[in-house]
Length: 311
Ligand SMILES: [Zn+2]
Image (tube, rainbow, N blue to C red):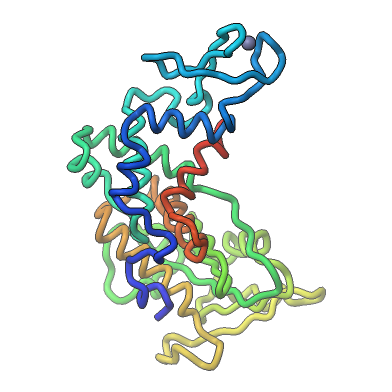
C-alpha cells in the first residue's frame, strides 16, 4: 500500500515539536497572547486608530489588550481570530492545536478532555474551530499523475466491499479522493457517487493533460469522453475485481494509503463521525497530509493559520 502505512502515524523529525518545547514556549496564557500579538503585528507595532501612524503598543496588565504608547487607544490581538469570543483559556486552545499537530491521525476531543479538564463539549467545539483553520481550497498542479478513487464512510454495514455499492451507497457517505502522486490530496464528500456529480469536481481540481488513474468503477466512465475533442485527460484503469492491483505505474496505491489513514484515524481515534461533520475531518487529515514533507513542526503550521486567517 502507499507510503503512509509504512511511515505509520509518526511525524517526520522536522515536524516534531515536543511537549517540553511546547511548555517552555507557551508557559501560560500571557505567552500565548504575546505570541499572537507579535505574529499579527511584528514588534507590537501597528497603525493606531487615533494617532493614524504606526505606534508601538504595550500590554495592558490584567487584560487581553494592548494600548498605543502615545494615546493609549486599545486593541485586541484576538479580534477576528477563532479565540475572539471564547472564554476558554488560550493555553488550552494552544494545547488542543499542539495535540492536533502531534500525530498524522490526530486526536479525539475525549483525549483533550482528559488531559486538560475542559468539558467534552468545550473540547469538541475547540476542535471544530481549529478544523476551520485547516480547511483550504487545494488545486492539483502540473500535468501529473493523479489517482482518483472513492470510499464510503459510516452508515449501515453491507456485505462485501464498499466498491459494490452504487448510487447512494446505502446509508454510507461517499467521499471522492484525488491525489497527485508525490503531491497534494483533495477529499470531498459527495451526495451521490455518480459520474454527474464527480466529473465537474475532477474538471475543477485536476488540470487538463494530467494522467488519471482510477479503478473500473462506472462513475469514471465519462473520463473517457472528456478526452475528446480537445486535450483532456489520459485515463488509465486498474481492474481491482480481477485482483490485479499493480500493473507498472497503473495503480491507485497512493489514494488507498490516504484512505487507510482516514479509516485508522476516524475509526480508531474519533469512533463516530457523522456525515454532517465528515468534510471537516477530511479537511484536517488533508491539511496534515499536504504538509507531510514541509520541514516545520506541524503544530506551528496550524498555529500560523490563526493569524493568517484572522479577519
Ligand atoms: Zn495612538
